[in-house]
Image (cartoon, rainbow, N blue to C red; front, side, top):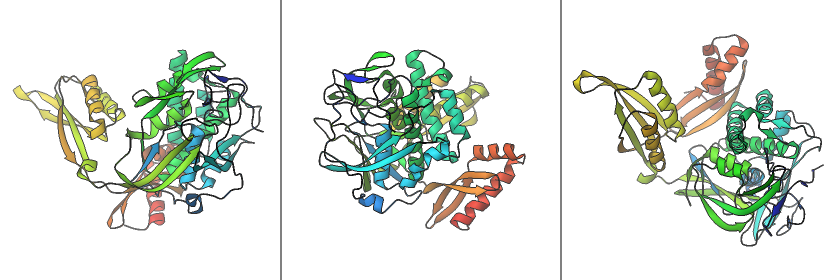
Length: 462
């Protein structure tokens, strides 16, 4: 059965119920956010259009995407009505990700009695897919640490596990900051926990399946307040805002919740850039529906998959550099990690001899143009330099995709680059190989060789 989200309601938010079902504190299952069902006097959970449980599938679902179909392409999240975890899954399924990818998530996590329900609905004049999570009511309360352990015990593939952990980490850090508590003690309460787990892992599974670079539009913020387990909270929710640090947002002029903490954590983790509309050629489009009606727009998330525009602007990158002579190797290594976190595509250090014969370093970061400012800020913050240099360069990339292969040491993710006339390169994910080597008591080279051999058998020889 699907539990009724009876603990909370939108306050002073008529017509725009986008809350998080169960509770607003820790967990934010997106049920009710872009809403699953009515939620009391202020819920206004009237569905626009008509739900068709047995209706026709979209053209994309009838012609599903192949795994890795987004390699070398862009996947754009267009969010005029906001974003939630369930809408993310629904939009990607509507785009063409096979439903089996999502259906397999509960069993991969060992969550019994949990299932996902897919229906075709209409939002305004737009046909869309709607996804709902159904689960037994007697769910345990799980802390962030327990959820991490649940994910690590799962049978999820390495790419899906890594992305799921990254998204949950962002959400838990946001909650920990709101409540000023240690991150391991953040609790995902009973109703919200299962929704959040399925939404995050389901979204990670779909995104890993597509394999595209993700871009997102700036996010619309609604206003008002919400009553939850912790009392009355302002909208946008405190955890949502914390998740979106560094992400462009704007006032949507809507009273109610448009972006949920789970949706915010997903998009803030996966998106490389935030643009109104990217330079690309759309090839497929998917729509993911929320449940509640919005007075001024269809309550749906649009995702579009397409090819990059091969223009000089699209290929332009920036080298951000600084020369320093007063940093230790430890500090330089720390700075490189911070540059990558700031959005650098790559970062490295070159030893040089400076004036007066002093040894020094050139710290270099390769950045896309849109991230160059943030990368420069990180270089100024985390190195001893007082100035940085910018050099515009162009970059040519091989197409790439992730392939999971079966080996005697377990499943290993392999990055496959090139093909279709380009040189083919296979690179197993080293961290996954190292874990498998420790678990089986063998040298890591043995696992690397086994993964390469298995990948060759799947994609052909060099």
